[in-house]
Image (cartoon, rainbow, N blue to C red; front, side, top):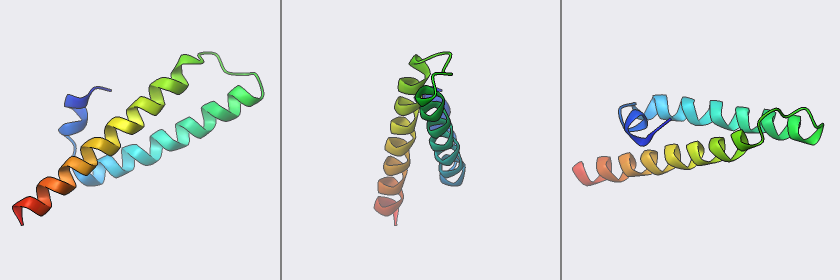
Length: 68
């Protein structure tokens, strides 16, 4: 998921995306703990996606407060 795709989403969609990414990260960490993780690089990719979503969500909050 790249930043351009994330910026096109509404804040409500971003919150839903953030929740699903956090659930996925939990599942990946669980799989890693029991040695069933197929792609360990997916953990870092999900962490980066979470950071992107949080950053863009914060940008939208700042933009909305500046427009008000």
